[in-house]
Length: 179
Image (cartoon, rainbow, N blue to C red; front, side, top):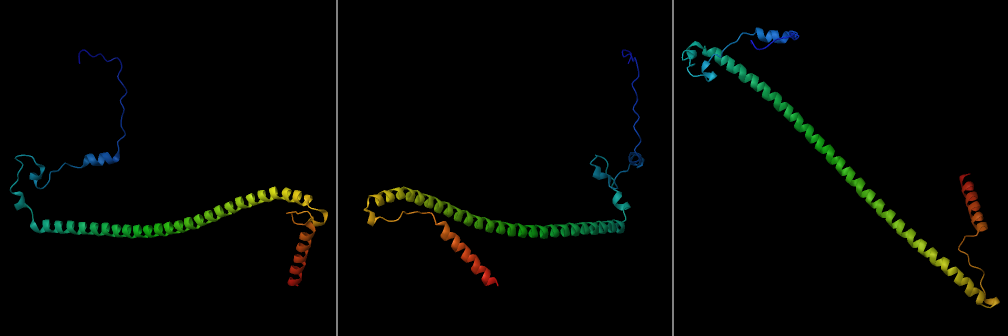
């Protein structure tokens, strides 16, 4: 230490005394009853077995056995409750899976029906295009015919007056059936 020159002493940090650490430090050190269990050579104590009261050791062992039995019963109870809860969850998950599968099948049928509707819509559009191409040809053919053989002009649109009459008559019939 002769070669080290201290210019300024550092601050000493005083640790607060923790009451639990104080209690632990107050516990006296002790050795096991059977010193041979320390695995230290020459620590055999042959007289220890003579010093132990067999009745007290038996009581201690029975008490330990009872304690272990209670712990085992608690663990078994917890395991059984976990097993039952797991079975309940499995049942709930299976029910949800079945319900979701049914929904999926139902929505697959809906999707199939929508596809059929789309196909029918495409077919109707093709039919409309064919009719739209056919109408000018019919008008041209009709104009070529002699006057007495000509047909009245063909229209795919419903007549407004007949549609309005049908709608008003259906309204009147539904109102009269209510009264």
